[in-house]
Figure 1 (cartoon, rainbow, N blue to C red):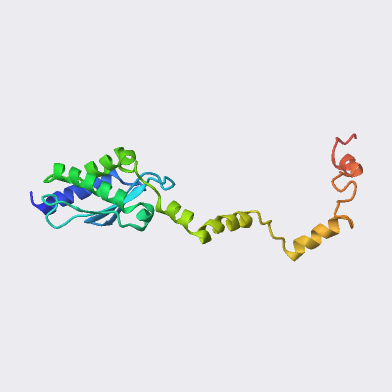
Figure 2 (figure 1 turned 90 degrees about the horizontal axis):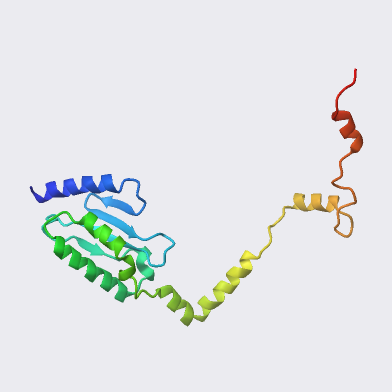
Length: 185
């Protein structure tokens, strides 16, 4: 088989395997993104993989330069790429995308064990970053804003002390006796 036929077969297999999977995204027929881990997981990362014309005889190009990966340190990225390159070398000449994706999922903890989030390092060193979470907490405490009409209705229902008048939620007993009960004819 030629490289193009191998690519077409692998592409068809990938589409059928990962159909509806939010972790897999086909950017083009030769470029893919695969998220390893859940979105909320701090140890999640996205693999960008592009096939050269002679794939699978030559290694695919693997990148961790997606914006999602900005919080991962350069050392951790190098470790992940080195381990993935080992897998690529072991599978060279065969369809390897599924193998790479599944290997990355299975070994996520090992790959990210030395991961230290860059964002945390920035927050510890920058004084402006440290003060921002306090202001964010104040914003969360903010009360719901009422419109003028809602405020007027509230004032009309209450007395001068802001309390509701006695019996404001009472039910008129006479109205109940007229509407409820059976008619005796």
